[in-house]
Length: 221
Image: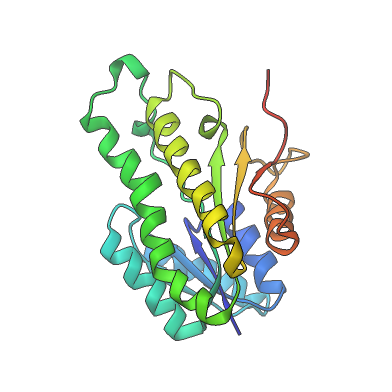
């Protein structure tokens, strides 16, 4: 059995995606900062017959993140699919003219050092398997900068560049890197951006392996 590792586990999109990949036969490794929160999510998945475990880590702490992913692989099997989709903090979204150099430290750690740490942790296992999928989930500022949200606009663009390079570099090894852009809010009441719809879209990206950048819905004008 191989593992679906979710960095940024939560009760909305994270739980829906974990449930979708778990239903396909993968073990699920849930990664976020709150251990009690992870235990609750793992128990909910367990009630659905999905093998799931929680691994506390902070995406701003590379050592804890790498340890969590290595431990998950040891416990549940090699990571075949990695989803990087933690929610950015509100303080990442200052207006551009109010943003100082130190204001960018956390967003860049969140969107660049975090993904690099994760990829370096799971790539050896994917290479041993001979296959793998790296899924990066971002908001619309990844492709359309918003001057009121400078931190995410800059950091998501950097994450996009990294993910695109991975897509090109790893394709010959049967490891597929892809990005899903979600322009609006995730809500159960939306047609294209409900957790269940997005979870199925991410699963389809994993199975179809048909390009790098995907959109939950068109960017608004």
